[in-house]
Amino acid sequence: MSFVGSGLLINTAGLYFDAISTELGVSRAASALPVSIRLVTSSLAMLVVGRLFDRLNLRVALSLCMAVCSAAFVACAFCDAMWQFDLAFAVMGVTYVLPVTIAPPVLLSSWFPRRFGTVMGVSGCLSGFGGVLFNPLVSAVITQYGWRAAYAMTGVTLAVLLLPFTLTVFRLAPVDGMRSEDGAADASSTLGAANDFGDRSVPGRFSVWRSPAFLLLVASMVMLQVVAGINQHVPAYEISIGLTLTQGALVVTSRMFGAAAGKFAIGPMLDRLPPPRVIAGFAVIGLVGWTGLWVANRPAAAISVSFLVGIGQGLLMVAVPWTIRRAFGAADYARTLSVIDAAGQATVAVATTAHGLVFDLTGTYAPSLMLNIVLYGCAAVCIVAAYRRRLVG
Image 1 (cartoon, one colour):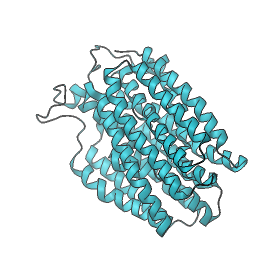
Image 2 (image 1 turned 180 degrees about the vertical axis):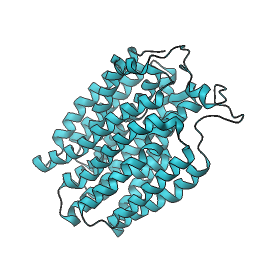
Image 3 (image 1 turned 45 degrees about the horizontal axis):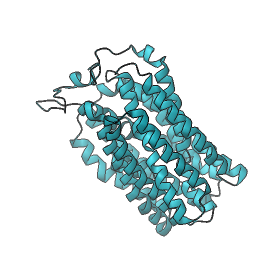
């Protein structure tokens, strides 16, 4: 799910912006608006999914979501006006939340409570490799056959690769004699445990949501998602400074390689080393990467620093959900994660379009990149502060 869902569904959206802008005669902000709409609808869906997660028949819910999401991608191949893209992406936003955003970390937390950072790192690594594979593939299809063919291919690929998996594999927690890593034999013993790091009590939900740790994690998620909002514009940014779409796709692919490496490394390090030092180290790498991306104007340089940007994505994709788990325990992890994720999705929805507006108004992405550098550093500070003020552990 991480490999195909994140790699193909989320990480390729920005490849279409320039082609759609050119063919339909719309601005960069208008071509990015459907992605923002998808993120808005996904943030609303997260609040519902978080409340209902442990009551769902996962196989049915995941399969239905993937079938509808795949159909929405295929529908984009037939769109002739931006409002049609807006509608299709709104449907995607509602349907990809459960299988791609909420299910992976909650299931991993349920099955691997004591090595959550490690398995989150592996999952994040797979999503990064998905981007490495699918970004150049989708870029090549757009270049050779057009964006309509690329949307159709994406929808069919999602259905073919994921539906058999969702129909046969998923379980919320160990049952019928199966064991998680700590010997839990059912969902209640795993999800209902107060905390899997030796704690015996979990604060009430409302005291959690009023706590400094929660507010700091929301702030870090918001800032990191403002930073992430420009990811969809990276191919267009590289084109704007003189690179080709193929070179821009290579920059994105380099970021995906870095993301795979960073997420694979940060998870085990968070489990085994002092977390504040790990977070600070990855923050430095990410800051160097974003600064380099701002100043690089040659393909080789842009590809190199993009790798560092990808390593720094470990903060958003692994460190934040890991810190949520460590800060508040397991009892209501799905709901707490969904609330913080919803804040992030709403933010990146605005940020994705806002970065496009910055380009439309100034003719450059430089102001957005400068802002990213500041926000990325502040977000790292907030994650460390949240860990130090955790309510359990």
